[in-house]
Image (cartoon, rainbow, N blue to C red; front, top):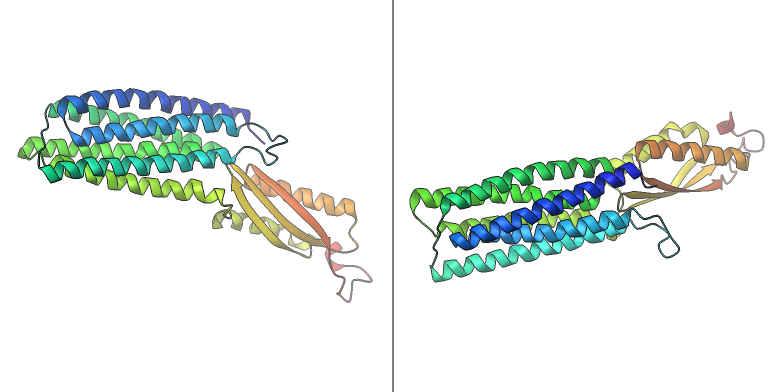
Amino acid sequence: MINPEHDTLKRKAARLSVLSNSALVVGKVVVGLLSGSVSILSEAVHSGVDLVAAGIAWYSVRESSKPADDQHRFGHGKIENVAGTIEALLIFGAAIYIIWEAAGKLRTGVVEVEHLGLGAGVMAISALVNYLISRHLLNVANATDSVALEADAMHLRTDVYTSAGVMAGLAAIKATGIAMIDPIIAIIVATLIFKAAWDLTRTAFFHILDVKLPEEEEAVIHEVMQGFQGRFIEYHKLRTRKSGHIRHIDMHLVVPRQMTVEAAHTLGDAITAEIKLRLPYSHILMHIEPCPGSCDLCAEECPKLS
């Protein structure tokens, strides 16, 4: 069920995220302390959280690739969902800290910002690096259906917008001389971080609760079943859920009473193969049931068998 090539891609992408975040955290902390800018320091905190999140993502993609064992018979896929949920909580915490610090500056009215050019330069570099890394992570996440890498990419994409916002704030301070703009920008940054955290929570946490697959994916299953409609009576009790990148699908398939076990098994295999072709990384369990035999033609020859 684990594609070795995809596993390698995921691990390399996660390591790249750890390295890039480490460099950005150091740069933002140094410039933030030199300038005294709460918005730059808020970005440093944000990148620090992203560094922790990148480490969690790296660990989770490594562990989730392990095959099923006696203790985890459905595999280790949900490690990625747990990792994404932890990352969301970390982002919420970072946003609360930023608002606390910025609100303190606004209450006291004491705001001093220096080295504006250096700060704007670091923000520009941060925005560019995070955009390139997040685009790469998102491409790998889409190719491998990795929740953890998607979460990491969302973090970094948020950093692009917040870095741009801080850079704009520093430019406004330079132009107007009003240093109070700095904590206001920091609060705006925090609201964007809250939005990213909520989106990530919806992506990662809800799958821990075994919510069904998205409507468009279940529609694919129904389309496949429609294609085999002339070979079975009906299907029911369709259940779907997702564990990491693995889709779990089960259903009851009602076949003609006269159909042999071998024929029913062959039909089930054909349906399963088509669903897996349309929805990769699917684990499908199909329960075969005979029809109740209430059709008038049942005693002779079931029309479905012709």
